[in-house]
Image (cartoon, rainbow, N blue to C red; front, side, top):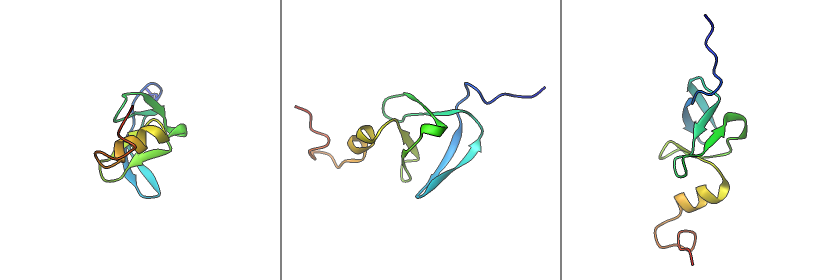
Length: 74
């Protein structure tokens, strides 16, 4: 029986210029929001923490130093 990668999270190793698929799947989960991110839409991740981000704004907030303008909300 063939296994489908649809609706299955992928396990990735994030690198500076891309990622390597460790376990096949069709999406990853944002490390901050828990949002599903389809692999073809994945653009933002952290090499240091090995986590994906759903958007540029989520990545900016997550990677900003504590107390910086990006982490302070009015």
